Length: 305
Picture 1 (cartoon, rainbow, N blue to C red):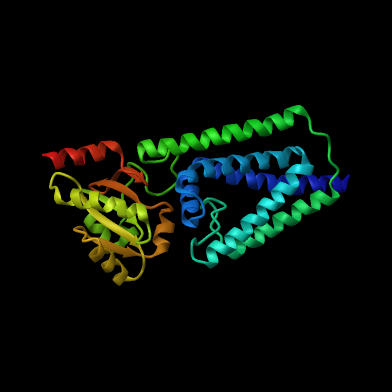
Picture 2 (cartoon, helix red, strand yellow; picture 1 turned 135 degrees about the vertical axis):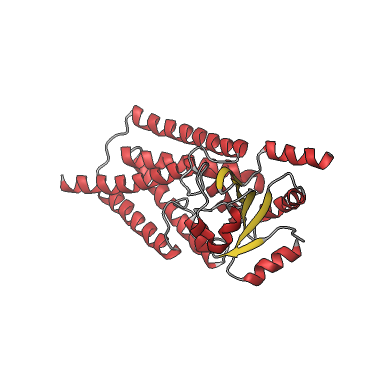
């Protein structure tokens, strides 16, 4: 009896972890897609379908482990998945392609070493269940729940991503940078004082971000127009020279401030480019990855005129 309780508990723990990380990816799927993009292992056209499918599989595995669905199949798959993710984490972080495992979608800040240790613990728990667990026959409704979880997770993650792409901001936002909130002076210290009056677009970028470079032409055009908001750029580097080189390389006509990566983490900027539109220091809109069509149309109208 005690052994049965222990094996059920261990599989439930890992199942809950899988399910929670899947939910995190459903709420903010763009973070996971950017992580996959950094790996540079998948064709760009397949990144989104892969991210959505992986999220659905992760959630379905979590429910499967909790309900004990087809354990002779689910257990080995889960162990192999964790082992493969551990190898991927070690490779991507040691080669500098990523700074973390991306496994908790930014909701849990852990080092690569901590991630590998946790994966080892999860694998041990599943192996314990695999060798000592007594499996009950899978009932029809159990695997049906797993199937429904897969389909629902895929649909919700797809809808969440589509909402972001259409509106330029997430349906659910957990970051300090939210609409109708004030820009806090302490975020940038003295540099914040220039952001609390007038109409300003603050753009969070990175020198290594290819999509950021696609924004630069539009941002320079906006800066030239007196009737459009002023532009202020932020890049995640503590090296002031890197910031100046970035300005010189792309002939930028707007100020760029170099900030450390801790500042980005504090404001939960995990996808670049991210931009906020300020009106007298109040955040009116936030755009993540894409500029909204109304703003692009407004720029085009100014260009024609």
